[in-house]
Length: 324
Image (cartoon, rainbow, N blue to C red; front, side, top):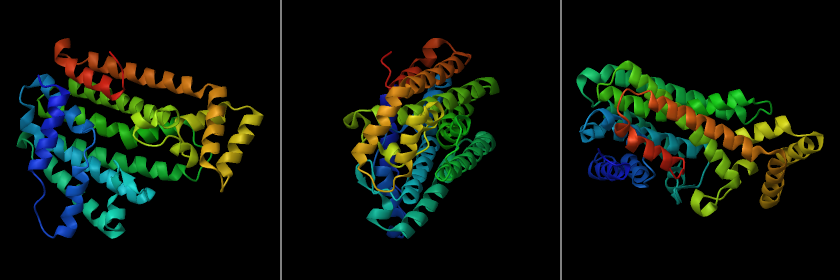
């Protein structure tokens, strides 16, 4: 069986060797640029690891796996445009390096290339693969819209937030492992258990991202902490802080949320102090552990010997920064 490290190298080598060589340059250069920026390649590696549990030739589905990675990078390109973000993975975003029109058109083309690559699977698997991928893409767009809607609401519930991150983040990880299982000829029960595994892993992964945005080490996290606080992002942490705050804490949170002009460091420190006093970090860590355990149990249900699941479990431990 392949290790996750070997598969990451295979994915990167494949992306580099199959660069989009079409014209005009103004359309395709930004696509090559986005895909060259790297990343953890979590989604294609999850697909390949899931496939490799059942079959020994994951290299045969590499184009479909890279199609999923192309789609993921398309969503980042458009997210950056919607968020007016300047930097992605330490480099200028497409709309900053080129312009907004280029980001829209090149992004749309990336989406088509993603579908083209995903569809180049074995013909007998085409229908279930495209059905799963299309449903996933629709759900991710729905999650993105919920995220936008939440920006103007102060009554977002924990249940609404969990559903939003399930749609926006989790379903693509779930799609990746289920698609790997489908392509390997796994039965419906195993494919379904792997989907549940990916979904719960995605929830744990996104909540951990929320936690690290407040409590992470910037050198390890890869970006400055406190961005969610300064932008008043409706995260699991803020939602639960508002629910559990006493009168004084609630008043201070509302003051910082409504402030139009503020010192960023002061706001981050003040809100983090409220989180500390309420116990939000511990609450979030418990939720992360609950979802991670649910993911582990779903993987256990897959009808394969434990040794076949070792590499997938190891990769998810690395994703969640767990030393196991």
